[in-house]
Image (cartoon, rainbow, N blue to C red; front, side, top):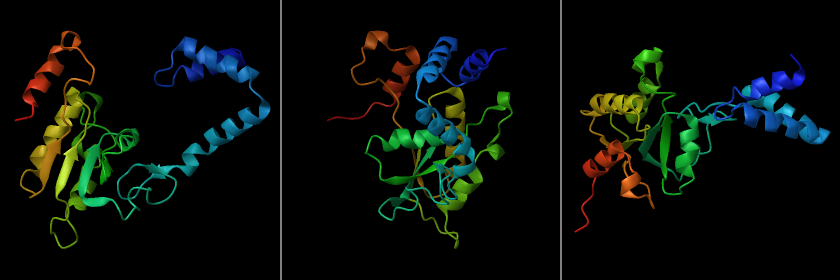
Length: 200
């Protein structure tokens, strides 16, 4: 197998990158200048050694505390629970959330052999109560994906926190802005109806 074929095969293992996209990337790199290639390869080489999980929330960072956990202006009484580190950036990009985050590191998925003990749930419970056992968090927002596994994880967390004295909420699920009803699937419509809000 040639270097070209090996690289195309390697890039096509990346999420969302098929063989055609991988091929385009490799041929682009062939024409790129050496400085760009050296810089890119150096960053890839340093990636796993430089990036680690935040000791508080679990999102990726280059220091012990991420920029969110070390920001004293954030509302520490509000925790948004997400599946993966990339979800933190997605929510942050809205500019609407000023609380903190907690990254589970996945979802409950018995078929894949992932149970609650494999996720960062114990750490979440420790964050909710301070050292004296008093509740220091007012609300936990569950922001898992609207999948079977995401819903299972959300339900598990709701049951776990129901007697904690903390308000537990879930991100609203429903129709996208600008979407037409005729193109919405039944599950999305069902969720929209169940999650409807009062306007008058």
